[in-house]
Length: 311
Ligand SMILES: [Cu+2]
Image 1 (cartoon, rainbow, N blue to C red):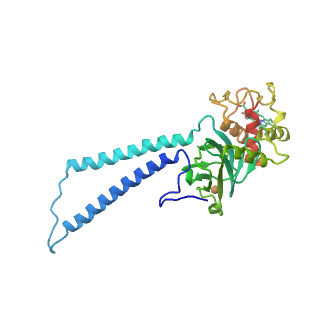
Image 2: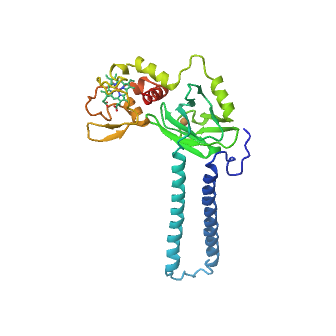
Image 3: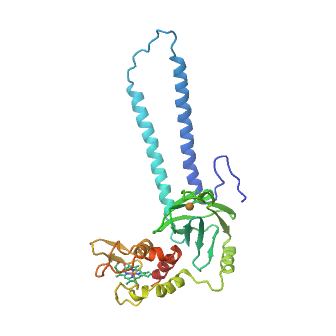
């Protein structure tokens, strides 16, 4: 792991890292200036107004409007600046560019696995350099958090829904991935690596690591659709059975019996599978079995979502 680390931070290796570091140093420098200013004034006052004789008593203190106003206004402005700056960066890290390469991430006690669009599954994350990569992340059990210090990105990984983070690596190297949400006994060993390749090397890696019998997530989802019995209630050709057809479902607007509605994005599809009773589609009954969250792994649910997305 060839990283030149500064005393503060590991060497930056993503397009967003520079902006995160600028904000970090702005906060650090302002804090140091305030710390030195406050502590030195305090020390000076303690010495300047020390008691000189046993019957020395302090003189009464009267407020100074200028001093009072300035220590309200200046910190408020600083805090507002840090908020707006930080929030804009937060949004930037959360919203991936539309042409991103997508990888599914599964976190569990206590390891990571990465599933690529062609069906390869790996325990370290392999990605092309200089290309935005979007991670669609979920957990099999408790809350984990995906952190790549060199990329300055971090996002919680939750059970039962997807969270997203993206990055564009700027160097070919190997970087550390850490879990930064305390998740039990071996939390502190929950490391993996990001390996960044040139586009050609990456494509070779994808082909070389494809097992002979491997399926793409969508193909695996198609098998599960039959094996798990979804086929009994959901058609693929638009005909309504006990449940709505999967044809054209992804991306459409769904209306529910309680009068609300939602767009069928990845998170909606996942929730519909793991918690079917939460929102009942208009015109249907609450008869979908509720055990899939327990009987299927997070990767199997990913596969079903990929399959439904293709109908
Ligand atoms: Cu963890």
